[in-house]
Length: 148
Image 1 (cartoon, one colour):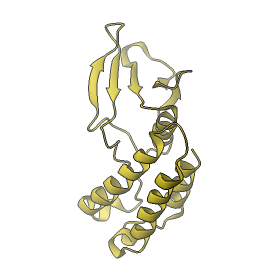
Image 2 (cartoon, one colour):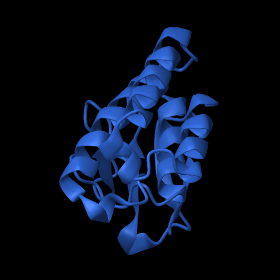
Image 3 (cartoon, helix red, strand yellow):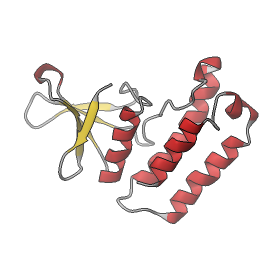
């Protein structure tokens, strides 16, 4: 697992320690979004850059990844291997809500309530339950995001 850190202005996150031939940046729309991305890497819910656009930093050599418009899809369901397709669909829907919540640089109660509403709906779904939506690691993850 790579550790990620944020730049002082919160515009980028980067892997630590910096390894010259592997260095890259991830652009963030807000410091909260950066903290969210760091949390995803820390929990190993994000481990590749699927859907990220790629550009080059003004230094001419550092790769900069830009998250997808609706945010990255976090792989947080502990039993996702039982049904990869359903797991991806469930994770995509909740990930989008979480991204919408962290993009503003302030906590928005209406957006927070949308996350809670979506998560509660998924907790009532039998497929979601079989994939582990009620597992303590998922509940803890949602609580950590809502605290950002």
